[in-house]
Structure formats: structure tokens, C-alpha cells
Image (cartoon, rainbow, N blue to C red):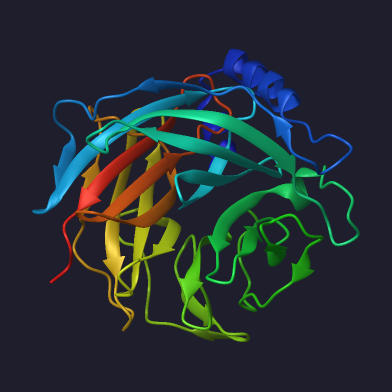
Length: 313
């Protein structure tokens, strides 16, 4: 997330005021229970130019999402067509993905949100403690959430509805606004990626994994396990608003090696501040979903794009 960078640009006081107004609409309630929220999903083309897809990768539909709770979305996982999302404002949002007969992503509906709670069961209302950036759903159903500013990883139990407990997180010094962005299941535990670099496997203690560092000005912003069991998918973001926003997706092998990009997006393609990635098995191989964080900024978009990948031979 780059709210500070956005303000520094000075797209001016008008945008700052609008962003503040948006924050007020996502203030956490006094309970952590689910509440229905409005979701509007408009079909969005990939666009002409600006997208480079590796052989075996094809666009499978996309959406622009709108709704008061659908700002600052930081990570995404998908289970049985139900999207799970966490936000910068301490919310967990779930909604159902809609596909046409050909399997293309064409809509989203039945959205609900709940406020993430602290170790004592009370709602997280302070930005410093509620800034959720990473999400993982483990094979046993436990839902893990990584936070930045106060860097930590908590488990919200099976189904994500329990009072959280502390779980292992890398014991490293991190910048306030660049924490554990990538979070994904791993054998016996979970993978963690730092925004500015670094990878760790936690099972249950954390140990360094690979020599992982983004390049070319990109940063790690999300990860999910390859449903085939062959490593992970990693999303990286280059963010220099308002003129340059790019994203790419690479494989991360079980040996800790990053592949050449599978997906590269830059203007004029449909691209924004991509931070979330979900990988699910599909009839043709793997379906990837990419989700952008609009920074609660009216000139940005919350995009949800789908891509189909042929099986890795």
C-alpha cells in the first residue's frame, strides 16, 4: 500500500479530502459479526496493448468492483467460488464469484463484511493495528492474516470466525508500511514474503527461504500456493502513480527460484495497484485471480481479473 506516496504527489487537497471521506465509510463497527455490504461488479476488458501473457496463459474475464466496503483491499483467496478478502481498514470481506457457461468471470454478488478483532475479542479500530495486508487459508481451514505497521501474523481459526491467536512470523525488522505482504500455505505451515524482499517458511517456527528479492522497482505484494503442489504464484507491483502502475505474476518454485513473468500488465491495459492473488484448480489447469487495492482513492479502481494457465509440464 502506498497512501503516503499518493499524498506526496499532491493530486491535491481535493483528492485528500475525498480519500478521508471514504475512510469514514469503512470505520469498524462495535462487533465482529458479518454484515451485508453492497457490491457492484462491472465487466472489464483487459484492454488493447499493455498486457503480455506467456504461452499457455489467457485472459478469463475481469470486473471493476464498487461498494463502500470495497476499498483498500489488500489480499485475496478463493475457496469454492467464494472470495475471501482483507483490507487496510481491518475488514474481512467475502463475496461469491459468478461465471458464465464458458467459465469466464462475469460478476460478483452476496457480499458480507466483518471487522477483524484483536486478541481480546474487541474490534481493531486503530489504523496502526488494523492494517491487514496478507491472507492465507490453510488446508485445515485455518485463516491467517498478516498485518503491517504492527507487524504480526494471527490465526482466526477454522472458517476465520474465532478469536485470533498469535502464530509464527519472521523475527525481522521491517519498515512501518512494508510488511508481510505475501502469505500462502506451505507444506506443514505457511510461506511469508516481505514487500521489499525476503522469504520465510514457517512450520511452526520461521526459517529463511531462498534469496528472494524483487527487481526493477517492483515489490512483492501477494502469494498463493499452486494447487498442483508445484510451489507458489507471486504477484509483484510497480507503483508510481498517477502515470505508471504495473504488475506481474511469477512462479516461485519449491527450491526458492522465481520464474520469468507469466503475466505482465501496464497501461493502457486494465491495471492498478495489484496486491492480492488467488490460485485455484480448474478444468484447464489453474485459474488465477488478481485483485487491486485502490488506496481508497477516487482516481483508482478495485479490479478483479481472472487468467487461466495451462498445466505446468
